[in-house]
Length: 108
Ligand code: 2BA
Image 1 (spheres, rainbow, N blue to C red):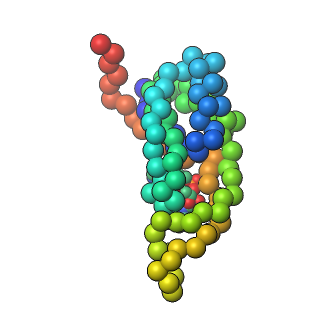
Image 2 (image 1 turned 180 degrees about the vertical axis):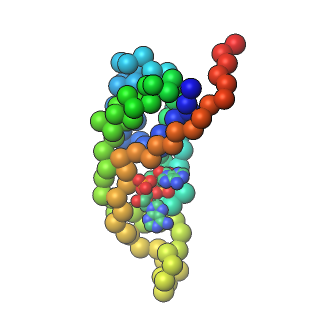
């Protein structure tokens, strides 16, 4: 089995939830926050058989779209000449997905 961690934008969370539920794929959703923008995002924790990893990747790709966003970062950028941070444009995924090996899986 594999553990998939998918970090997605909050706006896409309900679409992804519905698509995973449709395919009877079990997941746990965690409210998270990106370290760079400090904006809320959503992390899906999905334990899945190895042969279904590609299917889940396809579902995530279909459910999550990249967006260009102007954001005021909560950190000072390198090279900044003032203490005040200013809006910058970044493209926020899509999704950031990590696939980890899972040694064991128990449900009691
Ligand atoms: P954030 O860390 O808030 O990053 C949001 C977006 O800001 C990123 O989008 C990227 O376009 C930009 N960004 C991040 N760090 C940057 C930097 N040092 N300089 C300039 N721009 C920067 P994505 O790459 O699509 O990432 C979306 C979210 O996925 C991230 O939110 C973070 O929560 C997570 N993430 C991305 N890469 C990760 C990694 N290697 N490990 C853990 N989480 C990751």
